[in-house]
Image (tube, rainbow, N blue to C red):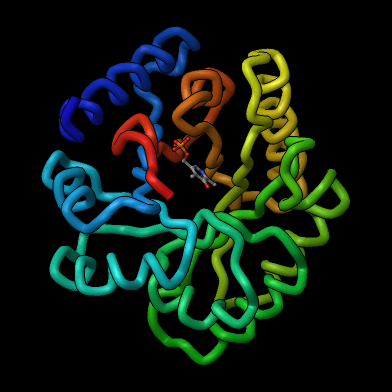
Length: 231
Ligand SMILES: *Cc1c(COP(=O)(O)O)cnc(C)c1O
């Protein structure tokens, strides 16, 4: 299957999941995760109509996207992998959104490196920990509330929602439970800090249909679009 065909197939499955769950007509953004895939693959996905890309490393992403975005101003790229504080400055100049904000010290660093910038501030999502096999993310309501307060204390950051990686398992119920945990956290946060939670980034190649059924507004899909990664 070509990248173009794979995108059509993913979109059809997204649409069917929306219909199944009674969300038909709701907008779910498709973020094509292009990590470890080259510029030609990104180009093909762009030509097939995709405008949003996800990368997990700052350096790899800037090689691939700095020039690409200049030539195609409607392309967007989100950081989805863990960010070291010393890369925060280059991250905010490349990425339109940092989805993987997973600790307080990173929020402070992002606040500091964006303070002097006049131009578009990056959006940030708080990453919520829902999988035992993962280490990253805020755990529980209190940690998320404190993180939200911290982000909101920096006028140069835009708080836009939550992101999670569900457990990597065939147990559909465990995956669904993880997504439901995020949705209830989002409802709690919306009540306390209204207006900052429109983005729910959850769902990858192996679980995006479940994520959409549970309320995702953005899915991050690599393998189902670009094929297996070699690295
Ligand atoms: C790699 C990655 C994805 C995409 O995973 P696939 O299984 O290839 O769709 C999504 N989200 C994050 C955070 C990732 O690191």
